[in-house]
Image (cartoon, rainbow, N blue to C red; front, side, top):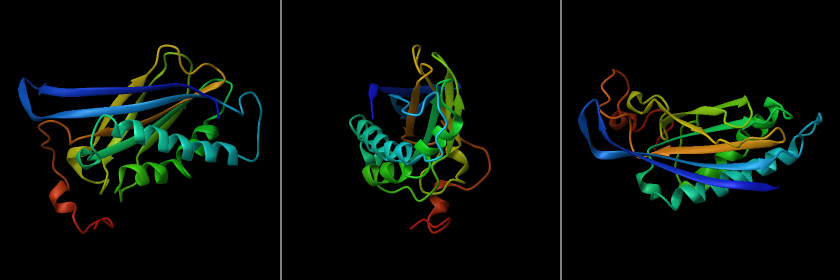
Length: 190
């Protein structure tokens, strides 16, 4: 794997709707830019990409933990932008079979599916990383997203891979639905 860049973003929401957010909500994303080993050619076997997904999952989760303690992480999501010389299936191979398992091993917990999105794009392409409560994806207060992108990535033969986490739900969440406290014992959680 050729790793070109590692980036960490840390956003802190202090005020929302002119009301203080207490405690402040943190949205943290770690991203990697790698050279796509399959750029420009079709490959039936994607084992190499699946193995890279596990490595990148570990690297990005460890970067997240340099910024926030694992005990504070409430939601997570993943995303991938493949440069134009690649294909959407490369993103699928990177972020589905092994990536999530590696993240859970490093961060701990996470019974819910890690929501994801993927697309093809060039330098400057941005992507909304979907976020859900890590222990039960149906907790309404944690339906959110974090926009991520880099001005020079991904180049045609590169892939941008993202892991995003938050320390809570949306500020002042008040739509109806499953509450975090009510999720205990549901959806396979604890």
